[in-house]
Image (tube, rainbow over all chains, first blue to last red; front, side, top):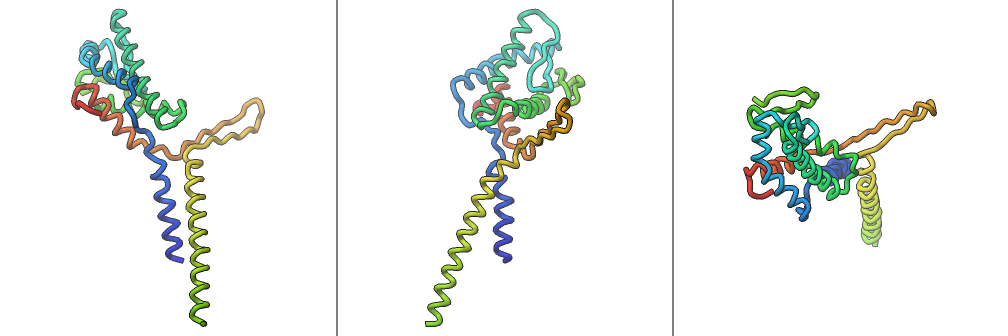
Length: 133
Length: 81
């Protein structure tokens, strides 16, 4: 009887682990590679714009355009488009519905806040804006 | 002769028990995803239906690691993802 209980308990504990952790980027397709490389090449430009407080790191995983000319808006839009491509790829590759994108965005936003440079504008989880110390 | 009968019974008993475990394992494996995310709809007033969405298990540890490595690659801190 003890063996049966042990077996059932082990199975119950192990089974969710098999299904959990399904938010991984499994394959770098040409589309994802392009989005990643474009973001990488845009990074220093984005850092400059963030230092000038023209762009901030939003709490939904995207950059927010504050003010500036059309060029700034263009950079922010391109960055957000590439981010969206990456988020959608994670969902697609893990066979998750598009409705789950908010989870992906939230986790990425948290990472982006953590990695933001000193002096950059970051939007906190509650929506308030702060300057990264 | 007596020993042989006992042994035969034990084998049959063990086979039955193994089948039970196999079926139980299959049942748990198949039903677990159902508990991962579910939507409960309760309609009291047809004009004001209540929808409760319950996402029970969302393990984001792996996603956090993915986000970390992607952002590190983008910022040039690492050369690979």
